[in-house]
Length: 154
Length: 200
Ligand SMILES: [Zn+2]
Image 1: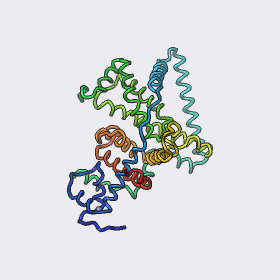
Image 2: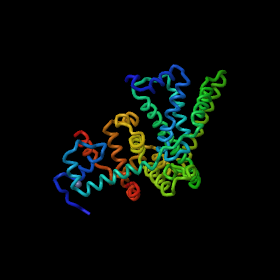
Image 3: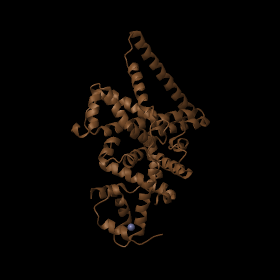
Image 4: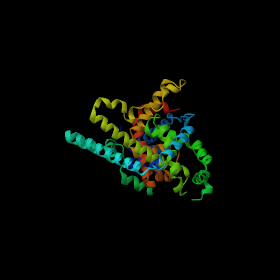
């Protein structure tokens, strides 16, 4: 359904600035919304979603939570005490090195056997990549960045 | 910043001086917000308590280097956010190893989306309808990209200012506003079919 806006303001700009986090002082935007069904519906949809998030109420942590922190703290403090004998330190370094080689060989092995798929998965491990892929799926609802920045400065 | 304005900064400075009861006081005060923050972020409470405890361990470890430049809660949530991001990264890595070994094994290490945040088992008084709504909301949050998710959770549930959110997630104030705005747009779309329940 398309309803012709009652004034010259662009619906998209109005909807972007309607967000309470970007709201400008009462003025043409509020007047527009009062008369434009599309923008009013948009604003109401957002408000309802915000209210719905309240369904995820606070939960009580377990009664053992604080005791658990103190127990972890105690064991962390024991762990962090430096190894006394020098030969123990060398053993630790050696086993860390061995573990590193093992992990590297596993990764190389996987990339080597199934290179196309594996390197694709490796790329996916980059969270930025993951995020931008997800952002692409939401492009239809993500408003123009420049427009919002402009409104924000206003 | 003036530590007199924030009693928790005062407590943290006592922790720095080796005061154990001050540390316990901070744990007591922040355990609930922290567990809920992390639970909502991860989309699951099973790892949330463990991770929240780990945050406090980091706080204690960082105490000697602590400098009161912001509210204590801002500093605490910054540590929590980093730990959550690392946790998610670790999970992605584990998932990759599992997937490449045997796709069928991936079941036991399922991603956020499938988890039920508000475990219905512990609250028999809650109606099925309400449980369903919790699950839907948890899934909608979990499906948000990481940066949008943390911003919207800090805003909606912790009611933080955009300045605080910006500090915690490491972006400008404008970017923090945009992230909340985008998250809200996505959630409005995802939750539209359930929006009837929100009308009162
Ligand atoms: Zn309009």
